[in-house]
Image 1: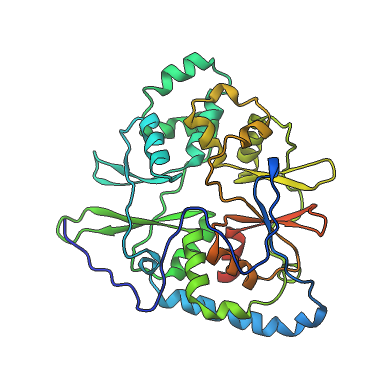
Image 2: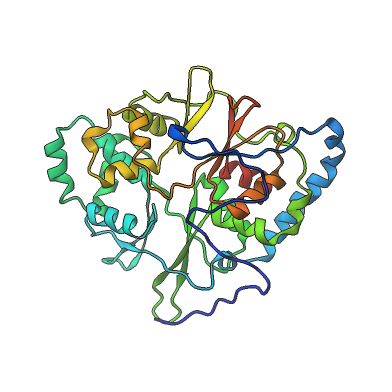
Length: 363
């Protein structure tokens, strides 16, 4: 296979970090017990004087877009990294074991028969399996899953009525701006980098870009984000109405159904006063599947949350007074996939996802 040469731009920090991190810079308040690591930004309330920053904010957005256009998708990758690629003929149970063993929740797929990139294996595939088997007996489901191959997951999608996954990819030397636009337009969270071997003409899976990797790269290398000082209340990104929520007593299967029906990746867990206690993430489904707990989908979410791994990065909150600059500062130093917007009494107000942030920057 012909060796490709990709040169990282000098003086950039492409480090990717997928583990837990301590955070300094923003004052976090940490709640223990079943609320499990809820971190909040304590940004001071802002006044209407921020209206004067509108032009500066828009200028900064344009500069961030220019930054993205000047750097390739490959620039985001660490100097040294590994890629977990799964063959579509692999048994699903072995694929799950490989994901968990390597501490990842998704992986690119390779069709060895046709020698080409075949998409991604993600949490959504496992949620589709749960939907498929939720009305089957546990013993029958376990017996069938034992022999289930990744390539059969497309049949599962058809049977549960799930939309087929898009076969998205981008060349490593395409600009980050193009990668961000593709992610936003496809409503995707990750984007495989696929090259063509110049000698064989075959596709080569180089790596996978995630929203978090890209936004962290911006946070660590793009100085223009310092001028993004308008609060969330003014830039109006995120979801603030018709938010899917659950209680600690809600069965996991009901939350899984919400994830599927709403096409969302998380559900805030609140109390009777709408105060945020935790968040159930689609990734949490992997923990139950890994332990073979298909038959325990009726257990209350409070018990499911206790099974999270010790390195769970926590739940991050912010207020409508927080700015994108402060959020980028958080992304730079901690693993963040979304922020739960709360008021001064920790009552749920909205959700800001990484998709919302990326869409705001490039549209």
